[in-house]
Length: 452
Image 1 (cartoon, rainbow, N blue to C red):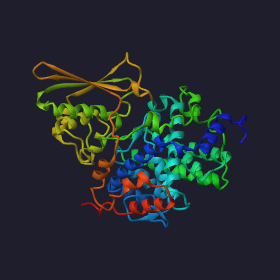
Image 2: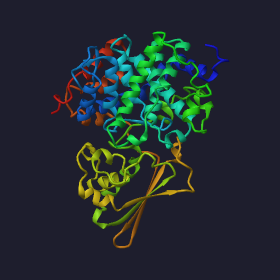
Image 3: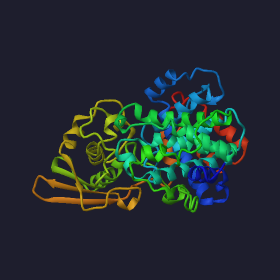
Image 4: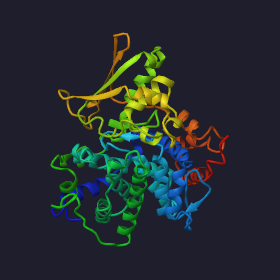
C-alpha cells in the first residue's frame, strides 16, 4: 500500500495487522472477562421472542456449521453473525466502551465466532483479534468526536462494521492492502440511527454490523474491489460522519499503549438497561436501602451535563423495552424494588405502581458543566428529591457503575443450569483450537430447554 496516497487509511490498516496483544496480560485478562459477559447476555438473549423472529427472517435454516449461541442449531456464518449479535444486545445488558459510545463486544465476537465455522484458529487468536477489533472501533470513535452520536447515529452500528472487519483482518493476517479495502467496504455499510432506541431494531444494529464486518472481510479476501482510502478521501468516513468535530490524530497515536480494553476499559453492566441510566439506578437502590419510600416523594429532578442523556429518549415508557431508555422509570423501579431485574425490562406493559413515581420525575441540564464526552470525568448525574414534608435529599453519582467480575451475572443469565456452567472457567483459560471447539460445543445448546 502506498502511504503517500492514503496515509491515514494505510497507517490504520497497518496498525491493525501488526498488532500483537497476546503478551499483554492485562489486555488478555480484560478480554476474557468481556467475552464471559457477552456470552451471558447472548445465552439469555437467545430465549427472547424477537431473537427467534430474526433468526427465521434472516434464514437461519440455511445449511452451515456456524453455531447459534444458546441454540442447538447450526447455520450459515453470515446468518449466525446477525442472530448472535442481536442476541447479545437484545436485553441491553452487554458491555459499553466510552471511546466507542456504544457496545463493541456484541458486534466483534459474533463475527469471529462465525468465522470459526470456515477457518481453524486458536481460542487465544480469537481473544487477541477481539482486542484489536475493539481498539480499531474505539480509535475510530475517538477520532469522530461527539457530534456523530449526538446528531443521531448509533455508534454500535456505524463503528461496529469497521471493528468487526478489523478483527477478522487481524485474525486472518490479511495484507495491508486487503485490510484497507475490507475497512472501506465495512465503512460503506455503516448505518444505524438512534431513533430505533426502545425498538426491536436497536439490537438489530449489532447483528447487522457483525454481518457487515464479516462480509466485508470475505469480499476483500476474494478480490472484490472497493475504495482503499476511506479515512483519507474527501468524501470519506469523517467528512460524512464527524460533522467537523474530527480528531484524526486519535486514529493511531499510541496505538495499544495501553490497549483501549485496558484504559479506559469496558463497563460491564450491572443492570439490564441503557448505560446512561445506570447512575440513577445505583442511587435508587442505595436510597431503597436507606429506607426512602415512594409515598414520601413529591418531586424528583435529574441534573445531567449537556449531552449525557442523549440515549435516554423515553420519558413515559409503555412497556419494559422502552423503559430501558427512561431514567424516570429506572429510578422508580430501583427505588421501589431495591433491584433491577430482567423482568423490569421485558415486553410487558410497565407496572402502574412504578409509573406513578416515574411521572413525578423530570430532567434538567447543567449548562456550566463540561459537555459529556468520551472522557469519563465529564459524566455525572445529580438527583434532587423534594419530599412531601418539605425536606429535600440530594445525591450525586460520577462516572458509571459496573461489574468487575461477571461470573454471577453469567449464572443468573443462564438459569444456573449445569449445561453452561463450565463456560466461564473455560473462557478464562482457553488457548488452543481444541479449547475453542469445546467452547463452541458448549454454546451450541438450547438455552430454553436447559432452564431449571
